[in-house]
Length: 355
Ligand SMILES: Nc1nc2c(ncn2[C@@H]2O[C@H](COP(=O)(O)OP(=O)(O)O)[C@@H](O)[C@H]2O)c(=O)[nH]1
Ligand SMILES: [Mg+2]
Image (cartoon, rainbow, N blue to C red):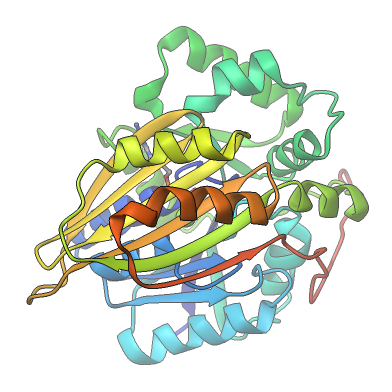
């Protein structure tokens, strides 16, 4: 049977993992089984571990985005099919990744991913950042900075846009945000939802299961040098350690860390796993959110995983983390810190808009 894939794209912290898991739970209530694929640049990933806590049918593509390691995406899809026979697979791309219409969607449709059917391709836009940051403080209609270019390109290449975190917006802000999105991309279909209160999820489910498929009208051009600059503006840190006691105040921890780094945080996420409990606390767009998951069971100390994407050098993030955790007596501390390397996609199939 052909695997049915739902591909999610969207900026760091926009709500892809939360949406992916919420959709999977909704599919389960309709008797359908979902497999998940996460994607990031390194090891010790909060979202992967959190998704694994919800479902064993979770795979990850690490060390590279889907576009730069397309065969790994295809292998993971095939692996999930063999091991779990899911009805659907939802895959979330790295948040700093764009141009997926040309580098992932069209190659899949050309059969480069094997026996695979693309059921949906959604570009996710963070509702909590849409009104204030994207509409008022940034210039996404006429991007000047690399990050604005990247965000605007994600929106412009979408066939379907999904505004997440609807619970963070009032009617007026949503209308203003939708207006901005329409001006950047007049042809995209627009959905909005909240994984928190469940609004809008049924419409997405119907859309995915409706058999509509994905039609790429065109792939907007993108200057890969600017794209590489956008990716390189953020330092990435992934770390993990054990603490003897169940740590509690992760909100304060993340706020202190942000102060210590002293630069814009795209997202900072901590996953604290004690035997009974799995708690994910995230700072994105200046907001703190908490997600509860299942613990691993059995005895043992708390395992802490920390991911930070900040407009700062990796060294500075490492120093701020180490300063903060010194007093917590971390055991087995390990980390990776990096600046993403310039994107070099496996395939790039452009299609001019309007052709
Ligand atoms: N209020 C609210 N928060 C959300 C919603 N969806 C995601 N979040 C929070 O936003 C943060 C980032 O979400 P995540 O799914 O990890 O984003 P990703 O980086 O795109 O995978 C998490 O702390 C989530 O709890 C939502 O619908 N409403
Ligand atoms: Mg994620």
